[in-house]
Image 1 (spheres, rainbow, N blue to C red):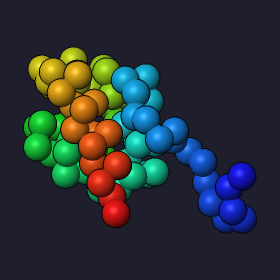
Image 2: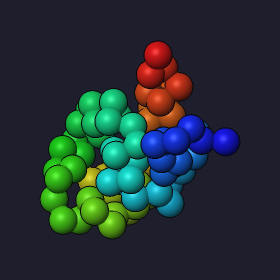
Image 3: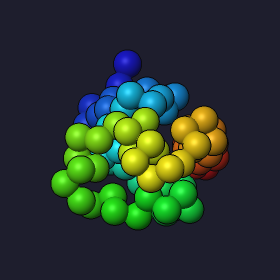
Length: 78
């Protein structure tokens, strides 16, 4: 059960169908992963509703590699 004041925005597994913005809001540390993949326009209007899958596709990024690195970043958040 979440503690008072906690938001349960994103599950502990980042999936291709989540929006880029909701993942960034829940896990700010993944910003560096998106940047490494050349997905640096994270504040643009498209990122508000764009899923990870569509963002990867539009940037020519391998979706499975991106998801692997995003999930590794949230597991290692310390």
